[in-house]
Amino acid sequence: MLSRQEENELLLQLKNAVINFDEEKVAQLVEECLEKGISAGKAIFEGLVPGIEEVGRLYEEQVYFIPEMLLCADALYRGLELLKNRLEKKDFGVRGTVLIGVVEGDIHDIGKNIVKMMFETANFEVYDLGRDVSLESFLNLYEQLRPDIVCLSTMMTTTMLEMKRVIVRLKEENPEVKIMVGGAPVTEEIAARFGASGYAENATKALKVAIKILVSLKNDPALRAALSG
Ligand code: B12
Image (cartoon, helix red, strand yellow):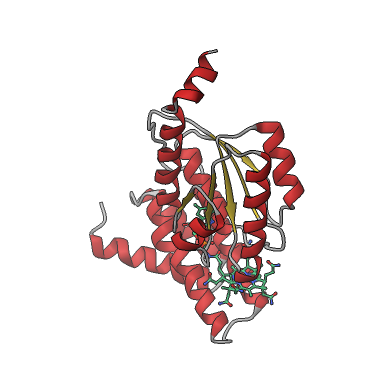
């Protein structure tokens, strides 16, 4: 069992391995975290994610440029790949189907993939459309799959309006649709203004919001009647 200080030290090393785009080191440290009893969630949210956040700061300060950002993202993904099946599964008493994707024009998919992983820990069925997803794909797949919730992600201010376009069209054609949004530039206020049913600033909160929406859906008398009929 590690002391809190030893645990923090290991998580700091993991963060630094992402910043130094050292994929092998990330893999080795992730294994070490798991062997020493650090949970997969902690390794992700207190090691890998702070690492990529620092990379963002280095990019803003023009210490790093796109090639470095790409290498750092690869290093983070190496860690996520090793951790994705190690997140603790929990039964919240509700299951749901979710359609998730990053809106058109945006290729940042780390956040979306972490949200997806959190949903999978609750045994949700997740249909992942990937990144740079067109409005038509969201509309068509919603029509085909009829998920409980559609989740839209974007990391750039420049693609936030695309998010609004998807919400407006989805709601026009399917007034009952429940849509959750997230990504660094999105706020609670923006989400409400765009007409979304839910927003969360991180993946852990995203799961809580999704569960609330699912519970409200299952308690909807009209929906209950339709399901039993
Ligand atoms: C890594 C990175 C990249 C990588 C992406 C790799 C990948 N596969 O994702 C690469 C190198 C490809 C890249 C490219 C570019 N990038 Co970039 N990138 C970043 C960086 C450093 C980290 C993003 C990240 O992964 N964060 C970590 C994740 C975990 O956080 P997150 O996405 O916010 O997700 C969490 C929450 O937001 C929430 N969440 C996310 N989605 C959803 C969805 C729902 C429904 C819910 C409820 C919650 C939720 O939960 C997540 C987990 O807790 C950021 C800097 C920063 N400060 O964010 C810049 C940043 C986003 N990039 C930026 C830019 C400008 C670009 C480029 C345009 C650069 C260029 N000139 O080419 C291109 C984009 C090209 C395109 N068309 O998309 C800018 C965006 C500025 C803006 N306009 O808003 C940033 C902010 C950097 C900066 N400070 O200028 N980038």
